[in-house]
Amino acid sequence: METSKEQASKDYADFEEKVKRTIYIDQLSPQVKESAIKAALAQCANVVSVEFIVNYTIPYEIPCAALVELNDDVQAKAAVDLMNDFPFIIGGMPRPVKATHAKPEMFHDRPPCPGLKKDFCWVKQGDKDYEAMQKLKNLAKRQESENMALIKKLLEEEKELANRQQELLDGNCKKYDMLETLVQNGTMKNLAQRYGINLDD
Image (cartoon, rainbow, N blue to C red; front, side, top):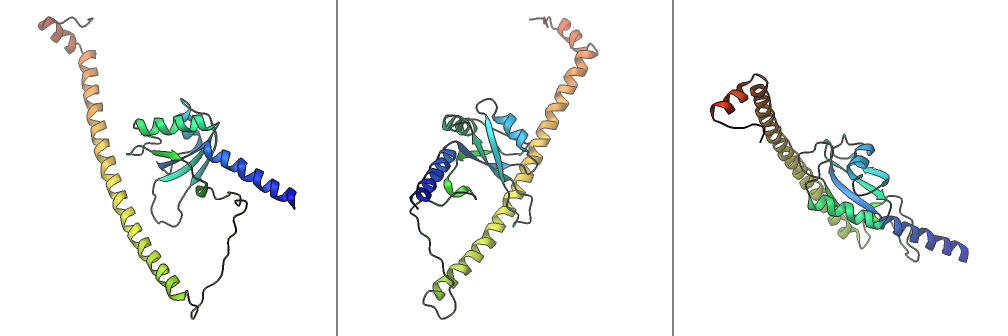
């Protein structure tokens, strides 16, 4: 029995160490793969594993999240600082990704905490807690509806932002194409000679 408790304590201690070296990344494009995350973080950390968190209950293609385990907590801090200090875009999402340090409750496979006891029971009509539980259930349904409406609005904003960014990108590309044409057909050189500008400076 004691051996079992010792093993449970060791397992949870190992899990806590894993949490320290894991970061949570949000606002990821649904098309992003593990290789893209590894490449993006290569400048400050070595990625050990990636676990994507996808919400299949929402009928929209929303940005997903991921738990990314790194070599150690030092790399985890460096990665979080990097993504919070600079605009850090992975996979072409119009908004930069968000990063924070992982928390134990984010892991679906977390081991039970030693010494923590949980009790469960079914509540049926007529029980003393039934009315309170029914109110909580109705509140959860209302919050779900509000959450769906908020997600839909955010997705519309993301689409509008992406369109504006694409228009800006297309405009810049046209400017560079025009400059390239002016250089290749000699117009740039002729203008420089006319106005006495040395292009080699």
